[in-house]
Structures are given as structure tokens and as C-alpha cells.
Figure 1: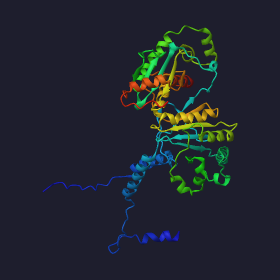
Figure 2: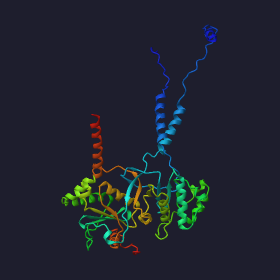
Figure 3: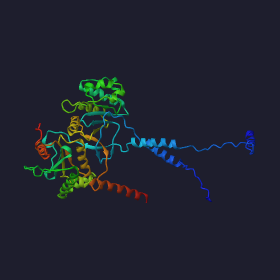
Figure 4: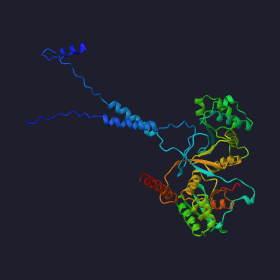
Length: 209
Length: 229
């Protein structure tokens, strides 16, 4: 306490008393800001905001017995073949003898094909009270369980298709809410048609299998 | 001359608010950053509209890179013993046993891309070298000699009674036959449910799924509104 009392004496202003130099309390922030901005830039670039997601894929059990195989109605079937370089081929129902219903499409076009086929199948739906009652009891949507029950998409990736193509087409099933679809091996006749359609007729290597 | 004296202002700006905000942003990014574990094989996954988060425990990841090489990763951070058991069992089933001491060098999340014949050599490597070692991939092409079959079988045994997710993480450029071979190995182990690892993507406007998601969001909102009133 005593020392505090004494201090004012020193601060007395007079002609011979030198003024104590007042130091500024400001600090230059610039280098600090520089470093922080660098850190921010570093973190912005290293951050991966979207964490990976997963999508479900259920495969049927392989069976040799004919009666255990899932039966699909040809009228509601849509076959999609995945070819080389993101090319897609599709046909509805059964393949014609002349392959006149074998068409090619791109990934941007296939959505309309799926939607149209789905609409077509759903428009042919005859009210099935038993099925609707079951759907309500199981809390499923009537659209999925009954109206499109004849609609079946068969996805047939050829050996030239990439994994991305497969995921994209499976995603298309989710996007268009297709309830029934399967990944199936293409038939040799279909593979031949794909080869011909890909325009590789002259350079096509002989079929290995 | 001039009647007025020009006031010279020193161009000093108060940086404090700016620094405050930048520090906040910095903190946000530090918190949000989750560093990726070093990946010896880069895999760029396709996009999908799926929104399920990827599980990071009790899962095995089957990776397929752009050259169609297959890798196996065990994710069991909570119980590393399980991963070691899988290695020991799988190698025993194949007839090229790896002793437990060596298997213990495996850490959850490490990528295995070696045939069983080279597995011991890989596990003997010091860790920094092991992460950089070029991996030839697990043989899957031929279903008779598919070694992935043993890996999945061992994982299934070790995780018996618990949920085990099979994650398939394929590269955009990998070809379908590699994926079919992986599915074949899983099917031979009687496993029919898998998850494909993808990156999120927005749902195309106007599609059925878009309408459904929009509808369910509106339901939630209207329920909330009803609750608050």
C-alpha cells in the first residue's frame, strides 16, 4: 500500500522531468491473420464433406430347381443390357425372332423407358383386393406391392460393362421406385445382338464361349 | 495557401473482428475434418441417391480397383482380436496357415490384397513399408481358386451371431466380371445381402423417388407444425 502512495511523486510534471514513453498496446495482427488464412485454406482443401453412403443389394439364392425360380410375366418384363462404353440396350417382353424390339439407349434416355414401361404396366393393373389388403396389413405402399407387381426389370451386364454402369442402373431402379428387378447373366443370343449393335461387326473378336 | 489543413489519417484497420471470424471458420474446419486413413489403393466410387451412412465397425470391405484387383479389409476397431481370428482362420482354411503372432500385426482398416501364398511375407514387413507395398490383389477370377471365398467364410464364422455387413467398394472403371466374381464368392458362402459403397448424389427432380422424399419431408414438417400449435 505504501509503495502505491509514493508513486504519484514520480509522475509529477515538470520541465526537467522526462515523459515516460507510452508504448502502444496494439499488436500488428497481420502475420497472425496470414497464418490463420493459410490454415483455413489447408483445411478447406483436405476436408471431405460428404461421407460415403451405401446402397443395399440383395441377390436371390442360386437354385437348380425350376419350380423355385422366380417367374415373371413377359408382358411386364423389361430387359436392359449393359454394353461397352456406357451403351445400353433394352427390349420389352420376349425377344422377337427378328430382334425388331431390340433397341439401344443411353443412360439419360433409359429413365424415360423405365418410367413409360412402369406406367404402361400399372395402367393394365386390375384391382386385386386380396393383394391390396395384404399390402395395407404389411404397411407397404399399394403402388409398390400391387399396382406394379407384374413389372420386372431384368438387368443383364455384359463383360464389357463397368461397375459404375451397374451401380447407375441399380440407382435408376431406386430413383424410379421399381420394386422388382434382378441382375442376371445375359443369354448368348443377346450377347451376339449387343456385339452387332455396337457396330463392331468387322473387328469383333470371335466369341470365346 | 490552403485554408484547411489536410488531416492525414493513418490507414490502420481494426483487424479484430476479421480475426474472430477467421478463427471461428478455422475451428469449424478443424472439427469437421476427418482425415482419411492412408489408402494404398485409390478407389473412386460411383454416386447414388442412397442416403444410408456407411458402417465403420463390424464390417468387411471388399474393394475392387480400376485394374479389377480385389482387396479385403476388416473393420473391427472395437475388437481387433476378431480381425486376427479372421486372418488365422482364412489362411488355415486355405491350407497356408499364418501364426497368430503375425496376424496380430494387422490393424483394423488395413487393406489386404495378397494371395495367401504371399500373406506371411506381407505381414512380416515393417508397418511403414507394408502400407506402401504394391499389392497384387486377391485371386477371384476363377471360382475354383477364388481365395475371397475363404476370407468371407472366415469372417462369417468369426462374426457368427453378430451383424456383419458386406461392403462392396468398387471403382468407377472396374469391369463387371470382377464384381460378378465377388458376388459369386459371397453367394457360395450363402450370403445374399450386400451393401455397395457409393458417394451421395441428389435425386433427379420430378422422379418418383423425388416426389416421395418431398412428400415425406412435408409430412414431417406438417407434423411439427401440428405439434407446436
